[in-house]
Length: 426
Image (cartoon, rainbow, N blue to C red; front, side):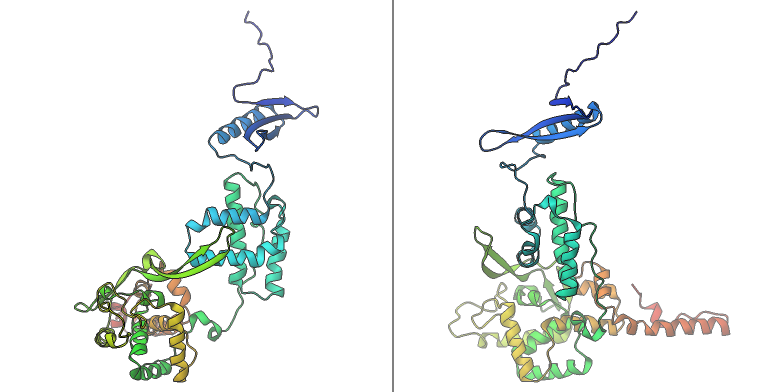
């Protein structure tokens, strides 16, 4: 007769201290660190079955051994300010540009920290976050983009805290954003291209100013971003083949002190906005002609004290009067003075890029071609920004379809118009 198994309370390997409470539940603890005095820091698990608690304890012990389960040496729970600051400085800073990171810092200091930065991160509720969103929308009348940015920062920090086992609940996921305000098409600044009559007026005014003639002509007829134009060197211009290579842009780097305060911002040459922004463009004769004219006259536009060769391949196509890189703000001031002096309106420098894309779409150039020329990552970006142009572009499509229907119903044959044989619609 087989011997009856004896029940034992002996703990299994790696199970730590597991015992049954008076209320019937099982309890287990795991040491996950030590404080400054050498005292053990423990994490406690509960369950209705001993096996469940044993599994939790074993998993926690393995995580602690691999450094995946930790607590602060003081054992204190971080505040919202501490949680977000640690996430931004330790993790987020590596993945964004200095300009974007500086925006993150200013945003959290302006909206999140003053509101509930002092609250323990684990105590922040969805209702508190939603009230902040509502206040920013209804009382402060802030743009949806700003409100969305605040919510995204909170969501990213809490999502990361959950992934690193610091927290178990993300209060941001249950919150709602306001719908985008419906403004008139003409009020959308980001869609403002220069009207046809104003384009000719601006180009005519540049005839008396070679500096502005070069900049405005190139920007309007290539669609380059201003930062890409200012970082362009003579080595990027292929006069023989009429090709311009865009592979760098000016950007800003920020320096912070030990307390995280911004102490300096410098303009430097860096990578393009995205990987897709690096591109080679076949440009028109008008662009090449104005660049040739500018190159010939450039030595007279810099100070006599400049000793280096401003036409060398590594030198900037559009330098300042010292033959060095122009800053965005400096160029913008020069551009505004020119526009005001000639009563040309208040079109921004970025309007020249929008004008380039708009002109192509008005001439029914395939949107995918426009996407590549602008350096957009995907076609959705192009179609989203220039959706106001597309109805006009595709008005002719309705006429083409109507003509096809007429041909099929009257003659029984379908004659494909030449316009559809030579173009494709994205």
